[in-house]
Length: 464
Image 1 (cartoon, one colour):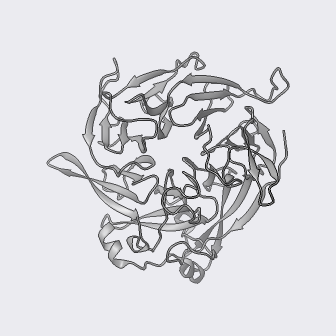
Image 2 (image 1 turned 45 degrees about the vertical axis):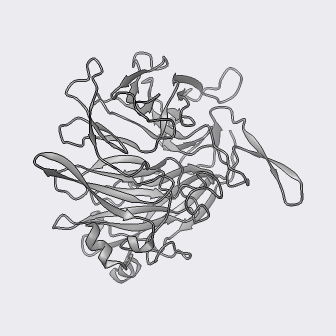
């Protein structure tokens, strides 16, 4: 166990900006839960950098030491909550790179080459999830490696050291090939137990364990004929699109309807829809409150665009209408916000108003310092507050969380410190970050002054 320093920064984000602000005072939203008697709330963020090294493109949280507090996992390490200063190595952290300095001297730096270096590299850890897989009451860690590589889970040793004296957890490799750059983890089948939701070797599908022995290789269930999906395909998700109570699978070219019965692994019916060219995680949610589930995703993982796709019916046929939230230029967003490479998305109620909000940002150096769209632009992190109008119109109000961390291929929001506010966890080429969500009551004047101001009224009219 080590006790590295944690770099903390209190962050209050400006919401009166045209695009990406250089100065960052005040990020706010009214909290309807505490709005009785004209009470107004400012949302601020305290940023903790747990590690500046690049070990993974994702991070997650769980209670790994069974103390009732949430811990954070990224790469080969986990940090004890609630202060995240004690670090543990749960699998061997062997990787390092050599940095040649301006004076010609060389320095060996732990991890893969990211922001601490000059060249582009990729980690062997792209996604992290947590679950008690062996039902022993302790949270285990699930890791998906580089796209096209394996999925493994690490068994929580319940505080005991390994035979070699290390704190390393036993690894169980359960599936060989997890393709896609947005595979996920959740209960697709409706049996109350999670599955790996992904595609493999050209087939869409999911993998589930034998729950009597989850350390054995997991079984893949194909739901499609063989197609052109490969390890670097972008965009994947699941949810009940048609409202039949069963969760469907989504990918960039459409959604696949779960049949009434999964017995015998039947092929699911595809409904073609163009949900962009391949973005990030895909979510099914009734955005405008009309009783029909819509789809939220980014348009292009390494380019531009965040959108929600409104479901409507035409002669009982399910169709979708695209509404852009963020695109290529500040003029494309009602509030003038623009950034690129939304390679990861989470969906969660950030302010307690009962509506789910979008959490996303710019993936930092996805293909290095000169790759993709605007690689040198600030690595921003945002949440977009969903507001519904009485006429079923929709607004997504942008609030900046941070301008120097961004996202990886995964961004996770959840309450880490038990205060009822969702915090945000990030792992990427800049390191590992925890953004602690804080609130403060203010006057109406202060609240009004700090709100994002619409600057493109015509965009608002077109996108509602």
